[in-house]
Image (cartoon, rainbow, N blue to C red; front, side):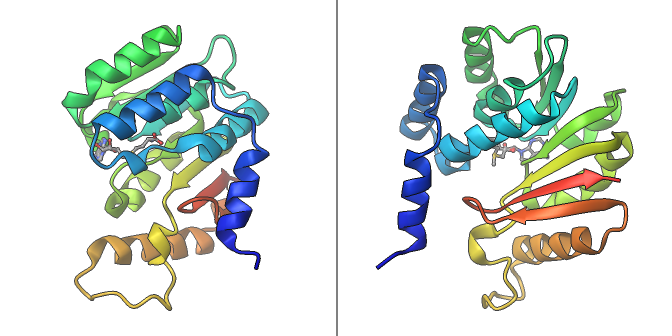
Length: 214
Ligand SMILES: C[S@@+](CC[C@H](N)C(=O)[O-])C[C@H]1O[C@@H](n2cnc3c(N)ncnc32)[C@H](O)[C@@H]1O
């Protein structure tokens, strides 16, 4: 009997494999870190790379670097003179991120900022072609409103984990105290009603919002 898991496995087997470097970072993250499933992983990583190749951005902003996997994927599609700014609040991740960015030969094009996205973003005087929001989900709306004015008309935002393990669906029973899920639901509904953007909700992995600023 056909199942969504079978479909995902089939899709993975028909998606270009990760580079050896990304495969090593993926493995190392899973072996050495807690919450390794936060890492985008093979299929989503290839999608981020593919979308970036389609857009050919010169300026990318990422909120939530973790071990740097998605930053390396997004950087693949940037123009040669492109720069990706990525913000991570956990200083314990810095050494590993910088090591992999260096191994990828991307030190000149990937700029890591250690700190809270809310503090860092206003200091970056850039116009973004592409933004990947993948930090603390309860603050999706804060980051969205913070960055949207800095996104060029026709630019793109991608927001991760918008299915939130299925809890985003109104039919999923949650506790009234589950503030994260309530925030994810409210944010998703807001984007759907937002006349400033067009959006497509992809049920890939944990859900990925593709948003284009009009
Ligand atoms: C889901 S993980 C990011 C995964 C990564 N983008 C990837 O796909 O491999 C979320 C990361 O956001 C970081 N984070 C959470 N709140 C943050 C904030 N306010 N500012 C910056 N980073 C934050 C966390 O420390 C964590 O490393």
